[in-house]
Image (cartoon, rainbow, N blue to C red):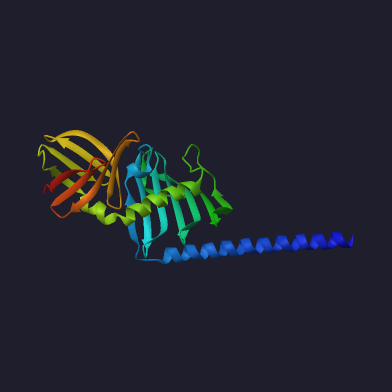
Length: 261
């Protein structure tokens, strides 16, 4: 009997300790969220719709990363559906996901009446809050009633890891992205031009559209692709305000371009 009582007390103590630990973790996370929200001088980096959407949505897609001292602190994703905005916030502390908020924000009816919706006004009808520590979800809260048939993310941890890597790579290489933007004429064949527009590389010949590729820059290498089987890489040999020199990989052919004003 004595041994049973001792074991019971040990279990109760362990359970109480775990509860306190979780409470403290949640308190720390909430404090960290407040600190992040108090920052006023973020460097904001935006992803193009082609980078985070698998298919186009009705209106208003955006995905922004908020950097403070060159470290990602927050991501905000907004998807516009016919009846509501889906807003997902991701918070980071020491490069680890600590909190995700998923909100369904249906549009209000237009003041003009009828069935028209006012896309500029919305209210939060449903929210999910996910709290994380050391790569594991420790708490989930829901507020309100979810709307049917609206998209949700099934695994925030794996999705966040992918999107953070994409943002960080783009942030590190933002100067290169900015430098290549615009229209360039191919010096070896001036009938050919290329336009770098955001994360797209669009090819023209005789001012007629030829094709377009998605693009990413990592270090001094530009990777362009339509599918995994149709991928091209170029090394940035030199870039100025007026000229661009690329090396096609793996052939090492030099490609020279002049900027078109």
